[in-house]
Length: 380
Image (cartoon, rainbow, N blue to C red):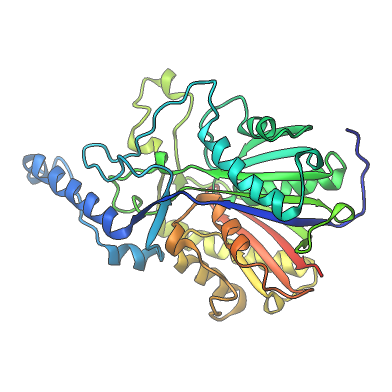
């Protein structure tokens, strides 16, 4: 299909959310972790006493909620995570002839977004899967979703950790602005729990699983009533190893343990908090200023859902004060950190009450470091 560059506004007309059926509360997670830590300390008592190993600290549900704001999280597979002899979800490998797990959950979210936008497969000509991890290198999960939904055109995967969803929306915007597509489905199948180190007190509670999807198109093809015009996009990256996962295809060649602690998610939490917050606040201020919008005039900020305290800090640095939860909705108390998808969940659940002309901002920040934002205006 050949497309022409168009000056028509680019709009978001539909979102979708797939939520797993399984829930793990802080209390369940802490009981499991503490049982494991106590057993570890008992099994290695001599080495710990000799200073050869460090004693594993215990945790509490209160510590988790105070540190992050998280109370529970949804997980794709609960079995195995709370088993102190396993401490990871138990998946059964699917044959190549079966649909992948990420395509499966991505399609569920995509169908919801398509229904909201009143689009069929024939209306869409590009699929972008943007997430933190993909379960295989190739073929692309996006192409699998494209095939399963019966969409013509093209699809591709992209990884961007915490900013994958916003960067994916940027690429969708670019496809529409350049004329290479007329309607784009952006999907975020965040299946993160297999990469969580459930034996690490400082990170075992952070992540949950989810899938989100967004439809972007040109205003001239809109049929949905609820929509948001994209006024502008902005991205920033600065290299940092303070949030990292080293899992990759080189492990086989380096003869190291492909499942060692450094191959799983790990971070220097305090450093991230101190360094990312001002970067995100300045990024938002610059983006809004470039569009002639005052931060105080933004009706709602849909921020990255990683840490409640960090979000409060970003808003405080941007506006000079704390703001009501209505202005910066949080969903991580019940979803946990769902990597890049958290802000899309927040947007999906809390965008219908805005009035025509209201300004909203989607903004991600985290690993990379990466920051990405979209400034939106509610349509009539």
